[in-house]
Image 1 (spheres, rainbow, N blue to C red):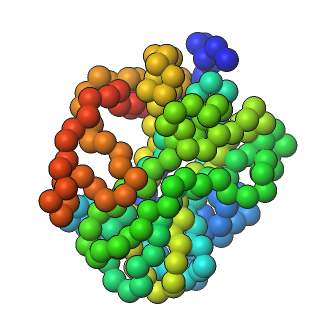
Image 2 (cartoon, rainbow, N blue to C red; image 1 turned 120 degrees about the vertical axis):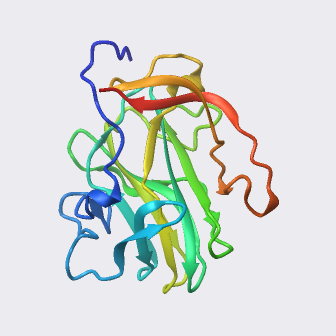
Length: 227
């Protein structure tokens, strides 16, 4: 699909500090309950030495879902990565993964279920873990979740899995266009510019450099929203 000339779009969800009414406790659809509901007391904004203003969340459900309620557009031929950094604080330690609801032209889910990436164990308190998954239309190397042409938007986020009672902090959810990195084609989604600068590798697990792990930087395109 040729992307030139299409209207500009912004993939990045808002920061948690902007409020929690845009963040669903369900699948992200308009009718789902949000973490901004006054009756829900197990989610709050917190200040963290590593994350700054972030979301502190106590797990109360079998699968604790966090979904951005905005519809992130998905276009054939493009690939995007969703990632977040998570820090377990106390209570039972669980698992985390990137997950999303795939939406079709009718405004309803295509698969009637979430599509998720690799599960990461949150094994140690006060350690930063990264969950990440790449979504795309073809099963190319580096793609974690493959969607067909029926998918035109997504509600993206993360899941916390495991025993209830655990408390975690979550840095802002990040979404970036990785089409150039996956395909070698420097065509990117409209509204984003490719900056040829170093970035830390997105590990499926423990942050590089923690607990003695080497934290070598990788040189890659980083995608930022254009003005």
